[in-house]
Length: 492
Image (cartoon, rainbow, N blue to C red):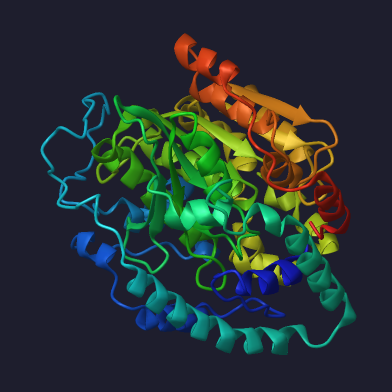
């Protein structure tokens, strides 16, 4: 993991800015750039579908005052922490009842009670204007980033390595209609609906990948992308979205605020809001609300797991009013190359280049690490009831992963099983952090990760399983020599 290189590289791929403080950042100062980003955005047609949000006047417990050994206080804090995400965002997103058993399947043929128009898309002119505004902001803050990094040789070497890595993989992303390269597919395919609004924050957008054949409700994947909590972006899921759409699965790639625009509680809140939107509205797009799967990769796997466990803890309380989605609406959770115990990862990240001062700023201080460590939360005996509410959990990890060791997944699975939850681990011998998610899909042919994800989604569906088995191998998008070179120079 080389955050300096990753961040600067992301600046030239339409990412939001980052700054690297040498101490815990001042949250008020961090919000300034967030406000600038929000005010610099050009009006977006998709904003027309954003409903009025009811202001939330509830106060949140100060993290420093939270007693991690007091289950009641922690449960209360988690309820307040994401309370904003549980505020109904759509007129029809009313709080769920206590039993969560009165859900019914909705289809696109039902009356449009949500007030949005799924078919509306942003114009090319608006896309260009929005990109120009972001480019200005990114360029200005790049210079601010350089003032933090200085001219040290270490980050310069890492940045050059990242540039070479991206250059070697570029053939798989550049425009080509015939081969449906990733970038062309993302921007021009009629199967992709970009930047659907799910909340009131600037990054509260999601991309929907919808199969061409919509003769019946399709299973749905709510996907949280990775990015070291700093450079995550919804477009990072375009390769997986393209693969799953070809297998008749709807994919919702949920964007969220990154550091320094937000800290970990903001990321978890955004993810929870995005999951709520998918659970309550995916039927309007032809999805089956009874077959929704939560998937996260890298930092996204951690954020998704936090959102899932926090939601289960809130549901385990006697008072469930105000919740807009339930863990019972998710068929399963799939975590790809994630880290779930932050206490065990601080020193590891520091040695890998994600310095502890930066990481602790992202995680709101050392006192918050346990609160945002799903492995630690599920081992708390007071949360046994919450753990029993969790859906089946599948953790996928490469044994050659140096960014987040595979032990992170095996330990989390062991903790879940010790508390009676259903958890399985699949290890991929010798695979690195990016092999599973980037190099292997770009290589074409049979994709082990895709196969395992589909085995979860299509479990109990013999026809879909037969289609998966008979599906032709994917085309190669990058020559093997370039993939080997990319793996060799990869800074991850």
